[in-house]
Image (cartoon, rainbow over all chains, first blue to last red):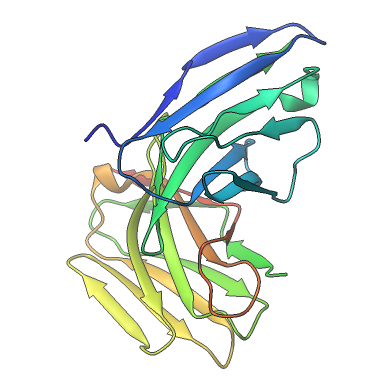
Length: 110
Length: 115
């Protein structure tokens, strides 16, 4: 199993641009998450999904959107990038209380 | 919702010494407390967890203790080694009802083990 994979690893965006961060897991987990990690601030939950077709907001959803059309994929969409969205983004999936994280995407908005 | 406070934010120890990181939580209904380790540039990974029906759990050089009355839990690392250098995050379930699928994370502790 590849586990949780994310693409791209790095990305630089200009203010106002849009992009989609991709997340895929091959473990058939129902629960998936998107977090952002800012320096010294831990992990903040953006959105999560309890299964295909079901998504819900986390602590910091503003400026983001998600979809979950399949069990495997959980993409995160940034519509109008802002400097405040500069961060490291982690996708994760859940099995029996343990969250398995992807390698992360480092996003810079200039 | 759950509020998790983690201390200290940075910790520097000499190789072979012990390290202790403490977290407090606010929701007395919380019953699951994991610790994640994140090496520089890597993803967070679960290293140990504890449930509210036990007071202590050990796995080789790491242990976690839980005090439900005081609502705090701690990570203990003995005989520290340079490879223990990382950021450690505690977490507790967000919301009540015994469901652990959403977590609130502490802000992290940067542990540096000096050779």
